[in-house]
Length: 289
Ligand SMILES: *[C@@H]1O[C@H](CO)[C@@H](O)[C@H](O)[C@H]1NC(C)=O
Ligand SMILES: *[C@@H]1O[C@H](CO)[C@@H](O)[C@H](O)[C@H]1NC(C)=O
Image (cartoon, rainbow, N blue to C red; front, side, top):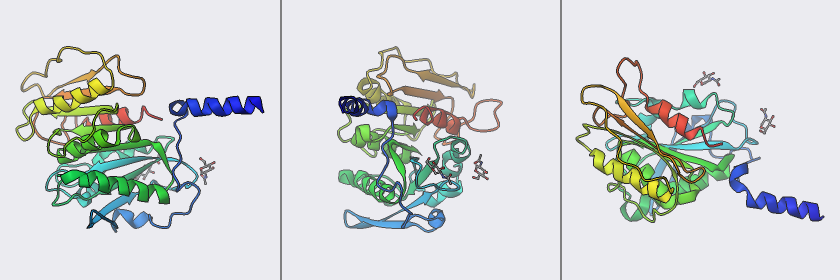
């Protein structure tokens, strides 16, 4: 009896070490999400507005396995359908499925549509919407609620940052590709969240300085060591400088990549045939298990 109590206590005291918080959908046959949910949107009403989102199940979805959940958010003028199809400069789902594929923890992708093709998040309405999406999806599917992530480009990056600000410990990590701290806002924003950012030196849509502000919020929240601003890659080098910050709280790393280039979701280094964006994002996300 005493032993059992001690074990129970230990279990309660080490939640992150175990990192498994199965959602209410575990063990249930999905009643909402199907393999057609990448082509037929699911709808919910949020803030009196009809909103839609798509869901991509992994092959052989297993309702007894807690899945990783990744939001892939579109940019201004974009759509969820564009993220799914990989049109207009995107790779499908930001290029993540072929990498997520080989992981022992399978991934559910959630692809929502913003209002007016953006994520203005007026009075937090997009955070409210995405919270509802989480609860809807997690009631239907088996998700590890300690393995929620968000990524996106531009407005999608701004909204991922905003989610990190609002969800705090309820989201494990975000990857902000060429984002901005103002356009979707940041409510609360004082909890640590693992943070990956990337940004181009010559981005003339959303300036690099503001991407550094987003990074700096999480450097501070995550308790990372203060260090001088790293050098940027030389103009015309088509290179990148990747900084993995030190001293951050356990489980709360920060990585920032500055590349020689503009406002693009799929920057490539010189001599490379494909972008590094999805590889860096996946390297960052997959460290959490
Ligand atoms: C489903 O997942 C559970 C738990 O991870 C596992 O024990 C079971 O073998 C899986 N079923 C199939 C058909 O893969
Ligand atoms: C990875 O996904 C593709 C389709 O997206 C599928 O054809 C392939 O079999 C998958 N590979 C593994 C190892 O699951």
